[in-house]
Image (tube, rainbow, N blue to C red; front, side, top):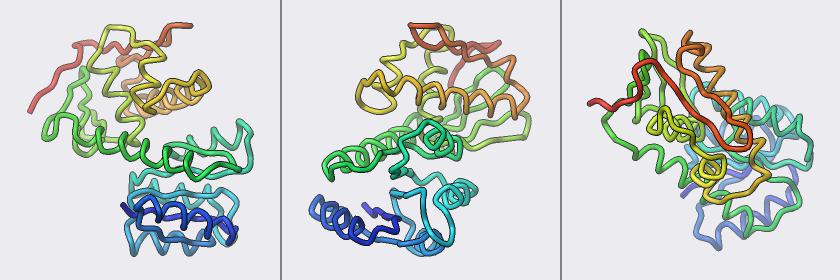
Amino acid sequence: MKVLIVDDDVDLLDVLSYALRREGFNVQVAADGQQALSRIQSSKPDVILLDVRLPKVNGFEVLRRIRESDDIPVIVLTALNDEETVLKAFNLGADDFITKPFSPRQLTARIRAVMRRGNSAGKVGTGRVLALGEAALDLDSHELAVAGRSVRLTPTEFKLLHILAVNEGRVVSTSRLIEYIWGYNNEEDTGLLRTHISHIRAKLQQLGVGTRIDITGIPGVGYRLRCPDGAHGRD
């Protein structure tokens, strides 16, 4: 598995590179945003560890450019443990974040978790489409389409929408969603879950079906998706 680490702290690059190589990862590094974009084009990494404070091209801009054309899992590395930074990263399409300082073991666990999410999302119902009323969720491309218009979902958004869709009309508990998406149950991730739900709602609105395909939050319980004709798979 190829991992690209993007950080302007050379000492941290050395420490993380050593630790991840010991875990069997193929590691590449970049010390600024411009170099990162070049590495992404040339080496096609499987996962990217991205600092937000970078010279030349900042990390948020790098993330924005990645999401214009690719859904490579991105874990944001940040020393800024504030809600605004975290929300901005998720709004731009980050899959996870980790606040410095962190242990190599913790980082390795996060990498494996985002890769499991991406892999399992891609394997669900290969070659099929899940119909959500008038919308269609492509289980291969992770695109949501309505009447010829489509939007791309991140791996996390895809997996979240999929589990809500296959349970259409039923409430899925917050704890079950967090466990399904992140592989562990941590109450602190409730806010991150809300952020991803808001992204999905925004994309439904973008397609003009936000009022007909409704994701309702049940306070203290979970979320429920409803659409006019229910959800069903088709080839």
